[in-house]
Length: 631
Image (cartoon, rainbow, N blue to C red):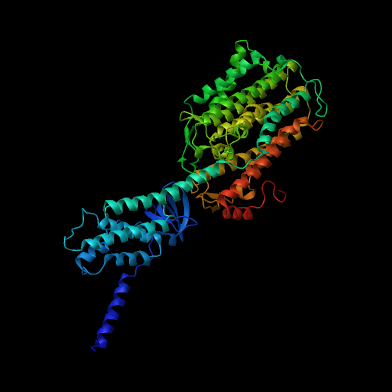
């Protein structure tokens, strides 16, 4: 037996170590603007991304869909450049190996030796490319016919087995692999692989998607289900009618059964109905005017859609225009006291219009695909879906957003009612006392602040997740203007007198609530826009599997819902000038507290379902929902 000299082996080891030392490279570093492949948070998948910010040990990257996340250096690598296809086992067989050795064994060995599906898939695709007729030169005498047929059968069999095993591979990759591998086989094998692909992709992927869609169509009932929705359709308008009948200029008692009007003319008047419809049409025309800047909303992601809606921010211009119309109407002989005299009929007109408008939007939503419908309105029960709202972002054209129109029209109607009631007091008494001036001023400032920072409201849960149904439409058209003006209405009928020191303290309380409400909404909106912006870059946040980040510092580190806390403080402040002689003016405060607590529980349940463990981390960091140490 012949042995190699020992110094030859030692020399080979030395050369291999020297070669490895030369090829060993330093850890890669990246700069801002580099295009890399970054690992998605919570998974082992790499996606195309761009470096947007560099830290000491990690990087902020922006993926192709716009998501920005922080990734460690180990989760970033350079994008692989496309390489030439490797020579397939069959081609190496014809050039290097003898004809007696079967290439099917090499293919089986290659396919069974790999453990990671992605590499195996890539190798098959490269092999298929190298065996395409346009790029290979085969010899007629290279392989016998029976061997060729055997190779084809083995390949189609292994391909079908691999497809069945790799069902979890995205559908596009399976289709790409199939189209490239179809060039290898004859007409018969092509039909076999097509049948395999159809059986795998259709029965396992498409069929499962359809079944999942059908299972997800029926959503869980909330708010008492269909019976609860039907009861609320009748109870909510009846409640606000009862409230305004119990407290009038003659008497005010919530426990006393009021005198109910007996005739239809006491509820509905042609003149008031016509004036209300004209008013709504006027607000729609103002919303269509090309005044104000166009804002890109928060990205909306769905099961099959991902879009960014555009909004025209002309709410403040509509608000000012509507206020300027009042003196114009008075100049042409329209009495502004008409609003106070027909307050009850105008409220009934708003209820009727809310039902009609909700029916129109419901009919519009019947043509929507199943994946565009509000997840909470897929119950299959018409009255429940009608109440909740089937469509989240109903629009006419590209820019006329019906949800924003309903909200803005309700806020402007509230302001008109406040001005009209104050004018009624001035006409009757010739002067205004301090409490009604403070309450009216606070409400008008609150409405003006809403329109001035109207874009901040785009990041709210109402705009992003809630459907436009009867509940929302009646809430903005009826409850918002006719219920929140109760403190002003009470002071018109029952004037109060408070010292200037108390009024100053109430004004300071209102300023605190307004500042908390505005800054928290602004902080959330700016962070949703760009978490690395200069105004929010210092804030801490918790990443989620959805690509979003949860604010855990600033106002949102104080309590989980600081905007709701500011809203409650605002409502309390403009109710305190009404005194404590009667509970009637405090009904809006009680309603707002109950409503916002319900919204908190609803939104947190949704956040728990969407973000999972990330939401648990956030709640452990920010422990209180609304009031520190209490709730």
